[in-house]
Length: 120
Image (cartoon, rainbow, N blue to C red; front, side, top):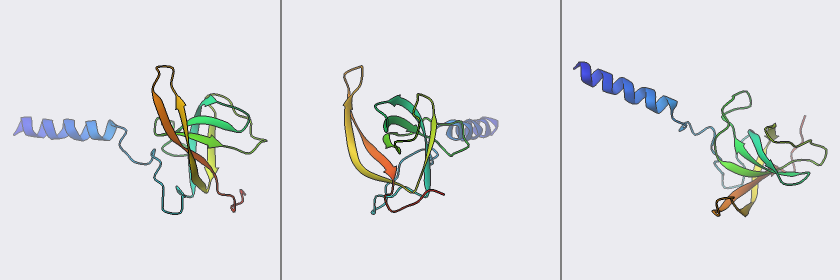
């Protein structure tokens, strides 16, 4: 009985520590939206308005190891590696393909603010 309780406890700890919360994933609805807001951590700046970024669990969380996306930001936004960006009313409008340093081909969603939304 003690072994069974220890096993159940070990499994519950492993599940809670695994990154399977779903909050750091990009889930696209039929209209292309992915929620009211989404936070990202920049991992590579491509140009003044485009960067590859990892999704974060939330705006306040340190955990940013979710899905990779190409984010599009307004031209007046300063981009640099490691910066946290929160996009209000984000939508997926396309996909972006690239090749990693290891020669792997990747395709990720392009995420930007919905054109008809205004940021407060």
